[in-house]
Amino acid sequence: MTPDPADVDAMRLALALAADAGAAGEVPVGAVVLDGAGALIGRGRNRREQTHDPSAHAEVLAMREAAARIGSWNLDGCTLVVTLEPCVMCAGALLQARVSRLVFGAWDDKAGAAGSVYDVVRDRRLPVRAEVIGGVLEHEARAPLEEFFRARR
Image (tube, rainbow, N blue to C red; front, side, top):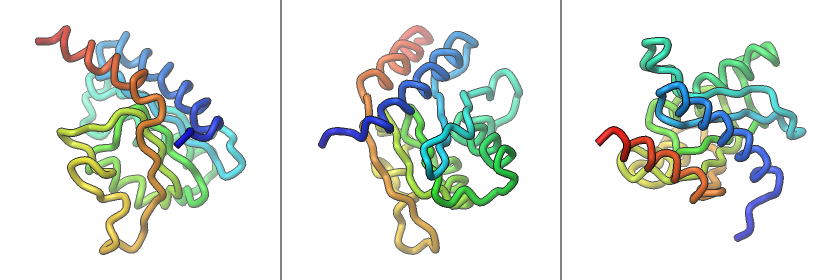
């Protein structure tokens, strides 16, 4: 399936944020939030090392910025675009924020919670779910992660 061109464009923005994270010594993950019309309303990159905050994942920071920009925690109708499949914490946060769509690049076969290890985002036992589109620019999203961890081994 060919990805939506708007999702590809948003992923390219997230990849640039991931590169900034990697350059700062963080795991290279970037995220953006788009409103229902496709306008950029939030951006984030991993900042756990910089802030000493275990919740400073790219997704959480992007959703915080988006919520502040629109003046509401409720991100219904919004799309979260992230370079790496969200972990359980981020999957829970996006559901709590009522994000409607999740688009991600690389699958995370160790901690992913949107279809690989867990599928929290689409779990029918939960009261809220999101549409999931994985593998958008997957190679471009995976390469910086592989290089980051290879350099640390």
